[in-house]
Image 1 (cartoon, one colour):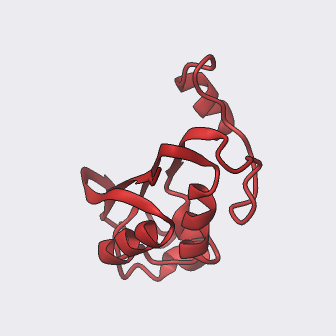
Image 2 (tube, rainbow, N blue to C red; image 1 turned 120 degrees about the vertical axis):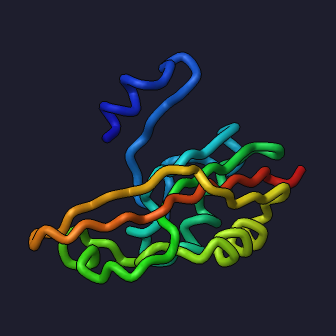
Length: 136
């Protein structure tokens, strides 16, 4: 995944780093933005992960997360190791605010994630885009 990110983004302006969701390899106030795509549903504690993603932001820095809306496809827990079956947008907005973020929005991406189970069952899971700015 890091190789794909490095191919798609300008390496003069963007740096991809591997790390643990509970302890990102970033100093407090180090970065202008943190981006997370479809990672939150794998986090042991999503609210804590959002706080950790907000921690390295400079004042005015942005946190942007895309992930799955709440769904009932239980097979994703075993087949794709999902810890969470998506999220309620109100919870995401609250967790952003509790992490010290302002101007929080959680909106449609008009995208659908369509995983297929080993048995052939297909899912159609809507995706949200959450954004917030670190308070000054």
